[in-house]
Length: 148
Image (cartoon, rainbow, N blue to C red):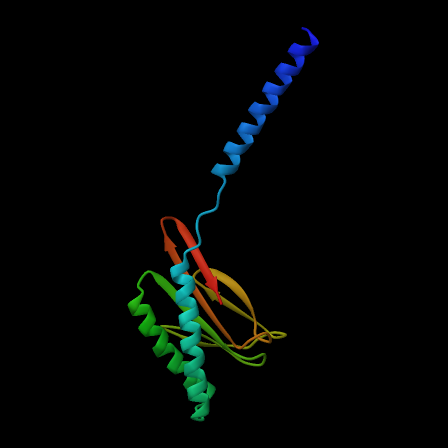
Protein backbone atom coordinates (compact mmCIF):
# COMPACT_ATOMS: atom_id res chain seq x y z
CA UNK A 1 0.00 0.00 0.00
CA UNK A 2 1.35 3.40 -0.89
CA UNK A 3 1.73 6.24 1.55
CA UNK A 4 -1.14 8.26 0.01
CA UNK A 5 -3.50 5.31 0.22
CA UNK A 6 -2.62 4.82 3.88
CA UNK A 7 -3.54 8.44 4.73
CA UNK A 8 -6.77 8.14 2.77
CA UNK A 9 -7.81 4.98 4.67
CA UNK A 10 -6.81 6.55 8.02
CA UNK A 11 -8.89 9.66 7.25
CA UNK A 12 -11.88 7.49 6.35
CA UNK A 13 -11.52 5.55 9.62
CA UNK A 14 -11.40 8.79 11.65
CA UNK A 15 -14.54 10.09 9.92
CA UNK A 16 -16.40 6.83 10.65
CA UNK A 17 -15.40 7.02 14.34
CA UNK A 18 -16.52 10.68 14.59
CA UNK A 19 -19.91 9.95 12.99
CA UNK A 20 -20.34 6.99 15.36
CA UNK A 21 -19.58 9.13 18.40
CA UNK A 22 -22.07 11.76 17.23
CA UNK A 23 -24.77 9.10 16.93
CA UNK A 24 -24.03 7.81 20.45
CA UNK A 25 -24.09 11.33 21.86
CA UNK A 26 -27.46 12.23 20.38
CA UNK A 27 -29.05 8.99 21.59
CA UNK A 28 -27.82 9.45 25.16
CA UNK A 29 -29.84 12.57 25.90
CA UNK A 30 -31.72 12.91 29.20
CA UNK A 31 -35.50 13.35 29.28
CA UNK A 32 -36.86 16.83 29.82
CA UNK A 33 -37.55 17.93 33.39
CA UNK A 34 -41.22 17.90 34.31
CA UNK A 35 -41.81 21.59 35.04
CA UNK A 36 -45.40 21.08 36.17
CA UNK A 37 -44.44 19.35 39.42
CA UNK A 38 -41.55 21.77 39.91
CA UNK A 39 -44.02 24.66 39.69
CA UNK A 40 -46.44 22.79 41.94
CA UNK A 41 -43.69 22.36 44.55
CA UNK A 42 -42.95 26.10 44.45
CA UNK A 43 -46.66 26.91 44.84
CA UNK A 44 -47.13 24.51 47.76
CA UNK A 45 -43.98 25.78 49.46
CA UNK A 46 -45.15 29.39 49.18
CA UNK A 47 -48.69 28.63 50.37
CA UNK A 48 -47.43 26.49 53.27
CA UNK A 49 -45.02 29.22 54.37
CA UNK A 50 -47.92 31.67 54.38
CA UNK A 51 -50.04 29.24 56.41
CA UNK A 52 -47.23 28.72 58.95
CA UNK A 53 -46.63 32.47 59.30
CA UNK A 54 -50.34 33.22 59.76
CA UNK A 55 -50.87 30.45 62.32
CA UNK A 56 -47.69 31.32 64.23
CA UNK A 57 -48.81 34.97 64.32
CA UNK A 58 -52.15 33.76 65.74
CA UNK A 59 -50.18 31.95 68.51
CA UNK A 60 -51.09 28.42 67.39
CA UNK A 61 -48.85 25.62 68.67
CA UNK A 62 -46.55 23.66 66.37
CA UNK A 63 -48.89 20.63 66.68
CA UNK A 64 -51.88 22.72 65.60
CA UNK A 65 -49.93 24.14 62.67
CA UNK A 66 -48.93 20.61 61.59
CA UNK A 67 -52.61 19.57 61.63
CA UNK A 68 -53.49 22.61 59.48
CA UNK A 69 -50.74 21.62 57.03
CA UNK A 70 -52.23 18.11 56.87
CA UNK A 71 -55.61 19.56 55.84
CA UNK A 72 -53.87 21.81 53.32
CA UNK A 73 -51.96 18.89 51.77
CA UNK A 74 -55.18 16.89 51.64
CA UNK A 75 -56.64 19.59 49.39
CA UNK A 76 -53.67 19.46 46.99
CA UNK A 77 -53.63 15.64 47.03
CA UNK A 78 -57.28 15.52 46.00
CA UNK A 79 -56.67 18.11 43.29
CA UNK A 80 -53.55 16.36 41.88
CA UNK A 81 -54.25 12.63 42.02
CA UNK A 82 -51.08 11.57 40.18
CA UNK A 83 -48.61 13.04 42.70
CA UNK A 84 -47.65 12.21 46.29
CA UNK A 85 -47.06 15.25 48.48
CA UNK A 86 -45.42 15.62 51.88
CA UNK A 87 -44.02 18.48 53.92
CA UNK A 88 -41.22 18.44 56.47
CA UNK A 89 -41.65 21.37 58.82
CA UNK A 90 -39.83 22.38 62.00
CA UNK A 91 -36.36 23.24 63.22
CA UNK A 92 -33.19 21.50 64.39
CA UNK A 93 -34.86 20.27 67.62
CA UNK A 94 -38.27 19.04 66.39
CA UNK A 95 -39.54 18.33 62.89
CA UNK A 96 -42.90 17.20 61.59
CA UNK A 97 -43.35 14.95 58.58
CA UNK A 98 -46.82 15.74 57.23
CA UNK A 99 -48.71 14.16 54.36
CA UNK A 100 -52.44 13.94 53.64
CA UNK A 101 -52.95 11.05 56.10
CA UNK A 102 -50.34 11.43 58.87
CA UNK A 103 -48.51 13.89 61.07
CA UNK A 104 -45.33 12.27 62.40
CA UNK A 105 -42.96 13.86 64.90
CA UNK A 106 -39.44 13.29 63.63
CA UNK A 107 -36.77 14.45 66.08
CA UNK A 108 -33.72 15.47 64.05
CA UNK A 109 -30.36 13.93 64.85
CA UNK A 110 -27.66 16.63 64.72
CA UNK A 111 -30.09 18.83 62.78
CA UNK A 112 -30.84 16.13 60.18
CA UNK A 113 -34.37 14.71 60.00
CA UNK A 114 -34.62 11.29 58.34
CA UNK A 115 -37.96 10.68 56.66
CA UNK A 116 -39.30 7.88 54.48
CA UNK A 117 -41.46 9.09 51.63
CA UNK A 118 -42.80 7.16 48.66
CA UNK A 119 -40.53 4.19 49.31
CA UNK A 120 -37.28 6.17 49.65
CA UNK A 121 -35.48 7.62 52.65
CA UNK A 122 -34.43 11.27 52.67
CA UNK A 123 -32.13 13.11 55.07
CA UNK A 124 -33.37 16.67 55.46
CA UNK A 125 -31.11 19.37 56.92
CA UNK A 126 -33.39 21.26 59.31
CA UNK A 127 -30.70 23.79 60.25
CA UNK A 128 -30.66 25.17 56.71
CA UNK A 129 -34.38 26.03 56.54
CA UNK A 130 -37.48 24.90 58.37
CA UNK A 131 -39.77 23.97 55.48
CA UNK A 132 -39.32 21.38 52.75
CA UNK A 133 -41.80 20.15 50.16
CA UNK A 134 -41.42 16.61 48.82
CA UNK A 135 -43.35 15.63 45.70
CA UNK A 136 -43.15 12.44 43.65
CA UNK A 137 -44.85 11.54 40.41
CA UNK A 138 -44.63 8.16 38.71
CA UNK A 139 -45.55 8.21 35.05
CA UNK A 140 -44.55 5.95 32.16
CA UNK A 141 -42.12 3.89 34.28
CA UNK A 142 -40.36 7.09 35.32
CA UNK A 143 -40.28 8.47 38.86
CA UNK A 144 -39.81 12.21 39.31
CA UNK A 145 -38.89 13.45 42.79
CA UNK A 146 -38.82 17.11 43.80
CA UNK A 147 -37.45 18.30 47.16
CA UNK A 148 -37.71 22.05 47.67
